Length: 114
Length: 120
Image (cartoon, rainbow over all chains, first blue to last red; front, top):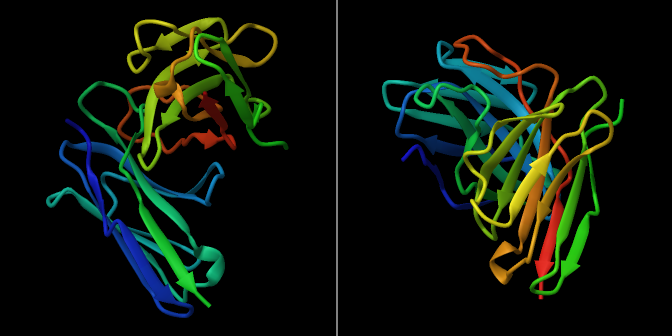
């Protein structure tokens, strides 16, 4: 199976704190992407990291990738109440020969309390 | 530039009826992907289409489900004789180029707001 896991399943923090979410996977990837989903809404693409990259930044977001451990983390710094959402990592895998079939985990539900 | 559009946003059907979900990709995008999200689950890939072609339907249930992306008009995901287990959110995504086998592709998929199907 190419399914992975995000952890924690749920995370509750205070505004201003940092939030770290992790994603693990089982088979080698082409790239890994993080998406945000607000309750009942569609997905918003946050950041993509390629398999040969180790770290990427975008505003308050920092993503790391450790291919030896088959894991990635998403760090949101100085969190805001508006960051409350579910966060998913999605991978495209080398096996299967495609770069379009995104494999999603179950996500981390982040709650930022004002 | 409008994003990916899906309609309807909410659809209620009784068991045995047909459901038609529509997706208009972003302007300039000719590649469409459908995903299904069951309650409290991640999205699962269903099908990948280009204009008038089905590229990969490996995630589609073998029966009752079909998808098309005609030369003109939106992509359609059709579910015949719906059952309660079809209740889910169905998301469409599009990309400007085909995300073919490549180690260096940085293209991504842009998702629509989804259609929430409820089968009574």
